[in-house]
Each structure stands twice: as C-alpha cells, then as structure tokens.
Image 1 (cartoon, helix red, strand yellow):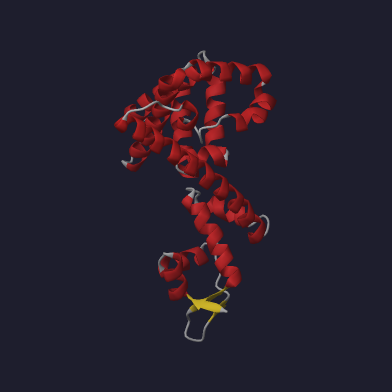
Image 2 (tube, rainbow, N blue to C red; image 1 turned 45 degrees about the vertical axis):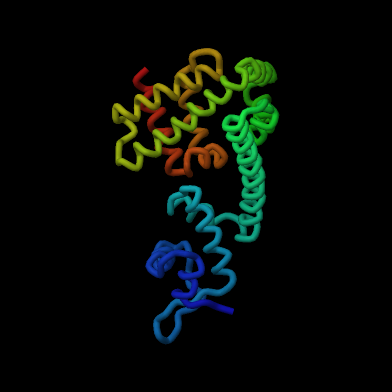
Length: 244
C-alpha cells in the first residue's frame, strides 16, 4: 500500500512542501516517483515520518534528526519513543489529578492532601542516577532539603522553575540573543534557583555542566521545550557563568 504526497501530507498534518523539503535534505525519501513526477510513500516511509515528527515535536533540529535516523531501525527507535510517551502520559495524568485536587480544595475549602498534591512530581526515580554521579550524601541532603520546604515552599520552588522556562521561551520567541540583558537576568534567577536546591552557591564549572546536561539529555531538553530551546537556555547559562 502506498500514499501520494498529498494524501500523506493531509494524514500527517503537514504540507506537501514540508515533505518535499524532508526529501531534499535526506530525511524522508519517497518510495517511488510516478510517471507524473509525483512522490509516493509506502508503509516504511510512514514509520520514518512518524519518527521525524516525534523528534521535531521535541524541538530537535534537522541536522540532529538526520544523525538520529542514521542509527538503528525505525521500529527500535519508535519503540523507545513509545515507552517514553507512555511514561510521560502517566506522569502528566498524575500531575493533572494533583492540580485538580489543589484547585478543588482551594476553591471549595477542605483539607489539602499533601500526598495527592504532589503525585506525579516524584524525584525519587532519579535516586540511582544522582547517587552514581554525586554520591549518596548528595541525594540524602537533597531529599532532606526538599522535605524541609513544606507544601508551600515546594510549590513556590516549582513555580519559579515554571516561570524560568516560560521566560526563556518568551525571550527566544522574541528573538532575544542569550546574551541579552533580559535573558541574563533570567540566568541569574536560574543561578539562585539552583543555589537554593544545592544549598550553596554553585561552582561555575558545575553550573555550566548542568547547562550542558539540559541540552544533551532528552529528559531535561523536553522540560525546556525541546533540544533547540534547551540549547538556548544552555547558551544563556554559559554566558552568565562566563560573566561571573
């Protein structure tokens, strides 16, 4: 079975021009070219396009997508994406229920259930990774600090990060370079936010290392709106660190 370029564009919610561009840059070759010059795509092409669109949704640029497509089969890569999407769906569903609980109790009164309020905001899934990178004491210290904040403190800390992400996104959308004063003011807030969680001033090298992780690790990059957005945050943090 195969689909014309117009059919595939309509099904995938993109334009024919986009599909032709993907072909021109080596991301998505047509399975055949008809005598009329039209491009046609088979089932394998559909799997490849799905993979491309998932990566674009994460903010990954064309060169990085090309590199990603060069390694491994589409089925294996999509299986990885599927696992990640299911995990994210579960986490987001839990967060939705948590926020619904907070809204309801705030508007209608009643006791706040702290466990329900923070369901889906679980940091313990990172325990092994933190322990391997920085040691068990770093994990214990972080958990003690998190527990000491109380419900309002944890909510305020999380809200500050939401505001930072939104601020970076708005600056990038407005065309502000990472070195702009407004963006550097965000990076300064980011420094203070990290200092609060680390319970000390970050070393410049550690701050830059964290910035690199934001751009390199898909989990962090997704938080900032995708790979390109995370790279923008990284560059802003680099510039701020250099100024210190």
